[in-house]
Length: 449
Image (cartoon, rainbow, N blue to C red):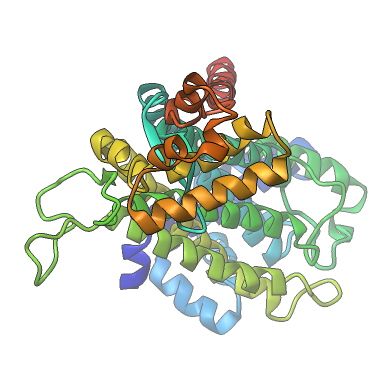
């Protein structure tokens, strides 16, 4: 339990608490009664009598789950307790024509829909923070790294623009699931709704309206693609958070020192090393993301379900799905904290660009030289110059200016341009503009909803 509390958020823990789970099942029962009354299966007064008792505070939740361990499902003791609470003839139509899985699956869909909304809200906040960083650091030079080695000059604004674009894509994916992947569940004992006679399809439609959930073409008791599609997307969201957090942690290394998480009393210290300022939000985000993605194989394995009702696969979702939402929420929340208070050392970034004495401009020099001679030969000559610079301790510029074979082809202006990091940023500005435009489009769509 301590681990779940550590890698979660208060709102997501509350959403997937036992109390909330009971309430969502009761929400299903109340909506089912209203839908069946609208379909003229019984008087509206029966639905009212059922609905007034569909409040979790009227139930002993702890006792309900103790009985669930014996019954094999929390829906059985819940329906029994609800039936005892409902007065008059209405108690005879509680849970009419439904099965336990209908209540549990629909409750799960309602929880997932709300959980997706909570994640989306926090992801919007990450976008806002990344957009500010991108706009502010559009022209902040830093070195780009491939395989953890210095490669080419980029700008910090480009790096944060890529974070921004990554998070924008996650928001679109989660919105799509909220709108279309979730669905109401109502199939009765074996997915035929035989207990509702000719009214089955009508009740499904009305139930979907009551709960503001899409109505499926068919009941999906043992076809779990909806659940797993959402789960896989949460795994991707968690992975996206790990990417951003990983960048921050690497940039915060002492030897790099280009960013640091915001200082808060008691945050990021060491139990033995007074000088340390650890990137604890990045660390926690990576840990939470790994926990989240550890759940995904379990959910993929639950798709192999037997006939019309599963023997273990469905039940495994009850623990896996809440855990996945908690872990993902934790990863998102920690990344939000990291990017919102990020301290950027622009001077250190400039220093690191010059760390290799100009070698990060080797490709730039090659491209300029290749406009005069064969590209393969140009690459060989620049590579030889780089090796000479490394062995002699001189800068690449010094080697070029003293190497007649290179200098004879290039003017001083061409050399200056080729060895200027700010002149070799390619389409950086355009890429940043695209990321910001995508975010602003998303913002506009959000405002219209």
